Amino acid sequence: HKKLKDFSEDFLWGASTSAYQVEGGWDEDGKGPSVQDMAEHPENTSDFKTSIDHYHRYKEDIKLFSEMGLKAYRFSIAWSRILPKGFGEINHKGIEFYNNLINELLSYNIEPIVTMYHFDLPYSLEKKGGWSNYEIVDLFENYGKILFSNFGDRVKYWLTINEQNIMILNNKAVGIPNLSTKNPKKELYQQNHHMLLAQAKVMKLCHIMCPDAKIGPAPNIAYIYPASSDPEDVLAAQNFSSIRNWLYLDAAVFGRYNNTAWSYMKEKNITPNIKKGDEEILSEAKPDFIAFNYYSTITASKKPSFDFNTDQQGAAGEQGVYYITSNPNLEKTEFNWEIDPIGFRITLREISGRYNLPLLVSENGLGAFDKLEKGDVVNDDYRIDYLRKHIEQAKLAVTDGVQLIGYCPWSAIDLVSTHQGFKKRYGFIYVNRDEFDLKDLRRIRKKSFYWYKNVIKSNGKIL
Ligand code: BG6
Image 1 (cartoon, rainbow, N blue to C red):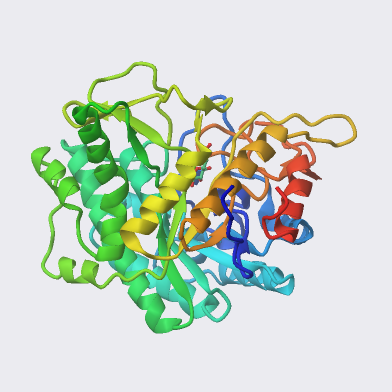
Image 2: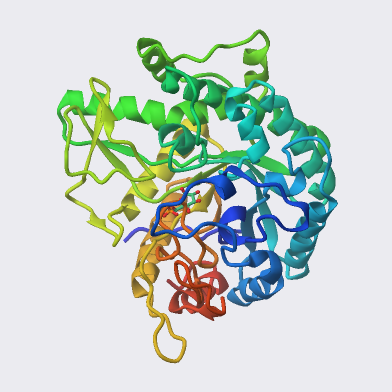
């Protein structure tokens, strides 16, 4: 039996949320609308107007987080709460809200881990072309400057853009609503380029303004398996890895485009226009760590497959490049997402091997139809099982030499899923509302709450 290394003494045992998925108060105290507030929702899923009303209940929620023993809490700041239009006048009520939130966390010794932007672009920026407009690079830097100067004295961990790769690969699901041109894919890669520049700029700025803080990107990274040992399946897996994973991390860490991804864009006639000076901006990006979200691996094949449920995490494929197929070795969640704990270890090792930076898991978790039983009980053993297996694999990865600084499962508390509404729950804490009936929004500790509390208390020894 292998002798396992322990998690470090200051390991950031945490949990995650994002602003629009928990806050509510979507138009309160001067907040401007975001693309999420203005998005159309499928008939059977909730909007984000109230979410779980965390905007008014953050004290109660943080008290529960502290009871669970969280050492860190990852949340995002709503850009349009700070700057209702995305630029211009600052909304002081917005600054006040996040000051209160951060101070409340610190009063319980919970380390705030702040995502600067999580799918909720200010709607007025969207109307000016959103990420297609080059101006947004400086507007994001300006927004960053406001965050660092107001919160940088207390926030030591910053994440730039949540799941930029998923926004590009599956733009309809997550906050890029309008593509105007005849070549929408090219426009997307232009947006991607602007995001990379914006990210590089805020990383640089953070180091200047907050020298003792750390900052890094937060894409969704999934190891891509070839469907077989057929060399063409391996090529398909490499292609998709370059387009989905390494394009984003190579740009964030090495400050340049990944070669395979670039030649793919060239072949498809979708390369972004690069202005004079852009390359230099990119090359100055120097993250202190890599945060990433992990839900499962992906399997790629040279030929199309019709059994794959295309979801937020993926994309079905492209002729001659790659296709996604299902992996017969893996079980699936109720929502048809594959479950692959060993793939988590593989992904951790791969990222660590490529970039040799500390890693922070910013999301990992299981969405399910939880059931509230008599006496306010939620027996979410399936969630415990999922998380336990992933933490076991994280420990193996640490033993393998991966520098893991924290683990923040999705999600700290039930929230509105990105595109599957409230019925798909992820939290350690149950929130008593339905898809449309807000009920009393009361908070109820799930079985996983008590389980995770022990995990944290034992620093990952008792699983
Ligand atoms: C990630 C996002 O993609 O996955 C979260 O960063 C999201 O915002 C989570 O909620 C789970 O996805 P979903 O679609 O089940 O909510």
